[in-house]
Length: 127
Image 1 (cartoon, helix red, strand yellow):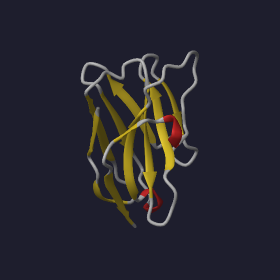
Image 2: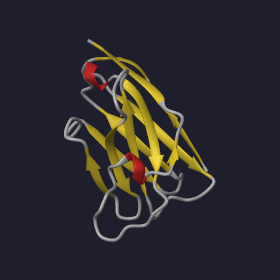
Image 3: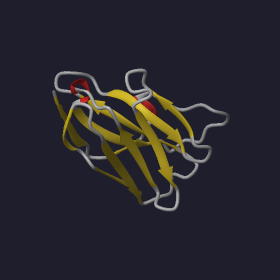
Image 4: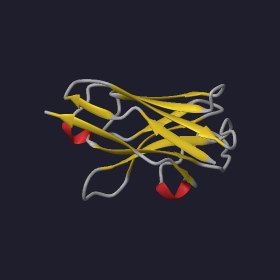
């Protein structure tokens, strides 16, 4: 299984970026995929996740209303649309996939829930 993240870059505060995460090796149509980020000197933190089969989503409070996670089952890809970016959003962004199936509307937010990780893509927001 491989997760290939792309779309990072340098943007000014208030700008937008769209991250992509393409999965290969297996389908994650019935699973959760998410984005985490890690700023220098800080712990990796949850950003957003989506249950692929139901499109139920969950967001960190710090990005609610600014970031949108979506999935494309045909392409086995998830996207993170990031609008109104702030300097504090600067980090390496990692996509992740969970091989477990959950019932109901549960969306996993913990790093340990996710077994597969991409290589990370750097997002830098200048003030």
